[in-house]
Length: 336
Image (cartoon, rainbow, N blue to C red):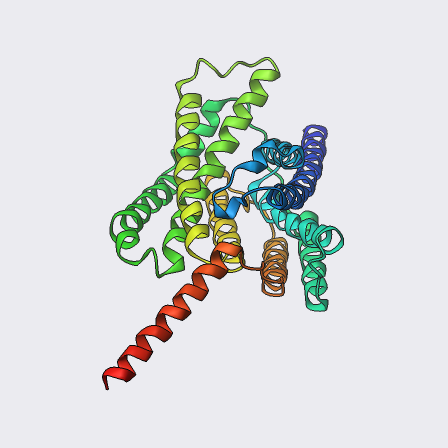
């Protein structure tokens, strides 16, 4: 019995290590993809209409497509990471992509990393190290039916019902009234729905892993329920994330979205997969401290980032608004 427990412990550590490697690789690919795509957009904009002005010349730019492929590889690695490691380990490590993009932007795009930004990078690394060292091990699952049992526990069903209720209120009541003025509306929808996205994606990933290992899960209706939930949540999440990015400053959206999304994902994973069951108080506190440290580093990095220069269209629009305001003010004074 003791030998069996030891072998399971080694298997859990091995899975966590594999999940960690995949998550870090994912962050490296995704962080690099932002820089590659941006260089492709700049190159395409130099010889045609910029994307920000409605141009699509970047679709003919090989560098942009290299960036897209790099991002797809990174997202695939992240998907596999959720199969082997708990969400409490994988999700916070997404902050490392910010470090990669910040460092590469410093050297390749001349977007200089300030001293405080370097502090943010160090905080992210320290926090990630704490999470990796104290991340809980996940119990082995042998069928999608077991995942279904976890998903239909009363406490997780209560969490799911709460998420759906809050999302519906935000979508049908708050979004039409306050979506364009309150940043928390769109980001709130993305974040709470995103926690269900991760849980369903993790379930689908485990089903695929078991199928590859010889235990087919395709005949189980639960597998297809998880697939449906995952696709539905992803579409909804991307829709409102795009709205948030189109309405508000990216430098503000990104850290708030990362904080809320990661928090809700950790809560959902803790309820569904019982990540903290059997863990000591010191271990839980260490992981939470790591998460708070990563969160602090992420916000420091975003707040110290140099804003993108306005496009020609935006500059023209601003000048037109200024001229119109001056004209109105001049007419008002003449009338007086």
